[in-house]
Length: 205
Image (cartoon, rainbow, N blue to C red):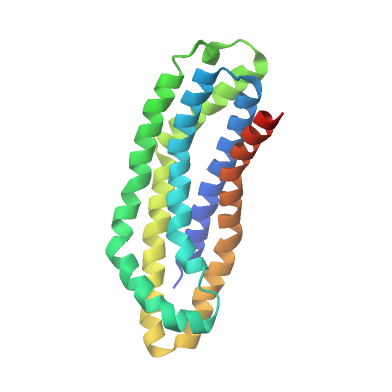
């Protein structure tokens, strides 16, 4: 073992980016309501949020195993399936990030992004930096998710090997990581839902 901290660290990094995107989205859409602009912004944001969906989807099956009985009954089949599919998961955030960048470039063609209004000017600069560091040039978001998925597979492989010798110890180690990951997954889900709630509230008003 020993990979647990790295998994948590990468997931925490992903969560920070989700919170940043949610803050940027709330600020921009709180000031700009032109339908065509909002539609293009949503296209970009939804492509980025696909990265977060990939992250949570890859963890949900493991977080759902909460007792030693479930672990003994379900882990082996879940691990076999994960082993056969996890590599295909790692590429999806990069594809979504590439699409998000194209959507961002189209968004930048709107005159609203050239505003001199201080709040929006600062927020668009914040968006520019987010895209540059996390989505396109450095692609840190996709890289963090890829690292998280690959290290999770390594961890699960070690658990699977230990389970053959001592199921109770294997579950104890397994559950310790799941407990550490669960709050971050909850934050990730919450950050993805916040913008949707704000839109619903605006429409209701």
